[in-house]
Image (cartoon, rainbow, N blue to C red; front, top):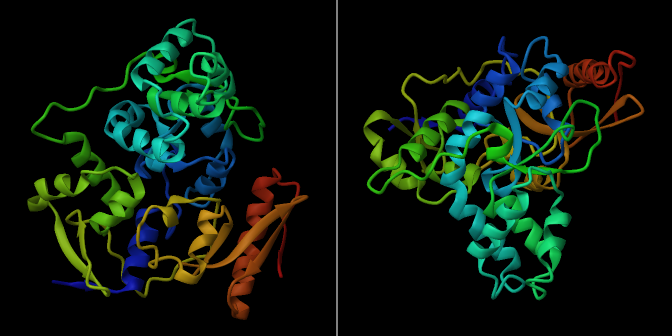
Length: 362
């Protein structure tokens, strides 16, 4: 079985994540290709797409949000993602068990004695008037009925788990600050989410695996689950084994992939790329060593924005007053510092609408 070393996996990841070459792709198609973008920080997807697409216009992504073609919702790993409307409708039911399990792991004591089906029905009845509500409003509406739970657990489980919800614009619109206001997916998109597949097959799980491998592969089953948080995907992989190719990594893990998917030469030059907070190019794996050293693994979890140099996380970056400041995590060569500065200047101009191109490597 062919062994792919860390550098080969790195170049495959960069190519699939549109980070090796900026793509001539629409923002909608990019969000779909990436299987959604982590978006708990609402402005971060704009930087993520700027780093991946040629001639990216942030107004286009804003229009996709207001036009209901992409939505913000809790899905993979119970975190807020920006996804196409079609993917939310198709994938939401497949995530239901994971969403409930993760929320109960956080609030098991507070929600003890709360009939979740009854709470969901009450929440749907309240939302039937079509008025968007905040998580706090939803929680306070039912705290008298379940006083032992507290309003935050009640509101959070309604918004992120029991009722498929979207976070409405202007939340997530370019350069707009707005509180989170929620509405059921069915009300916003005019259609209920797809029901779970009947027993005896997992077509949604298999479709998710194919889409994941196209954007993240080659990958181990543990990586697929690390991205989605969803249980049961090993069975989906097993059911489609005949249509997949297999490799091993240097640690001996078996990796699966789509036949003919890009596997660039490991010596392919990788340009400097600035990634936003919580980018799935890092978080979309259980084993993240293909792109980030273990000693820096917690940077992405902590929400640090990072810089890729030669395809690996090599610095963090911040922006203040139109100036992008880079803090290296290792010694950078003179050529690397020049490349980082030049890309940082382009990012500063994008973030400030051309009014600044200041970047500093400290």
